[in-house]
Length: 221
Image (tube, rainbow, N blue to C red; front, side):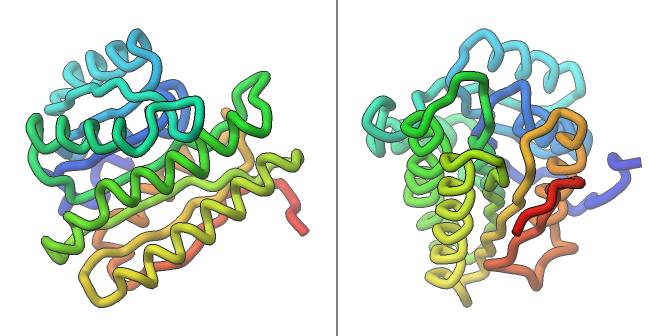
């Protein structure tokens, strides 16, 4: 069913950042089924290689690029610039950017959540959005967690505010930026991925600086 939606995405270049075993992986598979050329950015080489092999099996043109998470423990802005350079060399300028790094991995503490979620989102937006603005086209989708712990709450709010800030900054340039919020749970990963795909598609061409809540049955006050 999903493979027949958003056919206009065929041939576009997408950059997808995030763990291969979560929303990012699901987004990649949906993009592959629509003929999108994909650059997958991840931290775990083995998982990344497995996902890229799967995307090739689905018939997609895909490359995997290993990059550390942002922040004081990661590669920082310079590493993200290197990722951008690799994407340009391998596939060309991206039309779509998915920053899907916000997850609740077991044992993740405050600094890990902030680094992988908020800091990496900032660095990815800084690295890729200016070229989209120059081309006057592009769609950005970020992922904000709606979890029960303070770190998820802070990171989710920060990612949402940051994405909306960039959306306002590039308003009128043809570039859109929107957020999917979710309660990290395996049972709704495909729903979250499809919501991200919708926001990147032409069906959401009039939407920017908005939040699409796919929190499932979670009640957020």
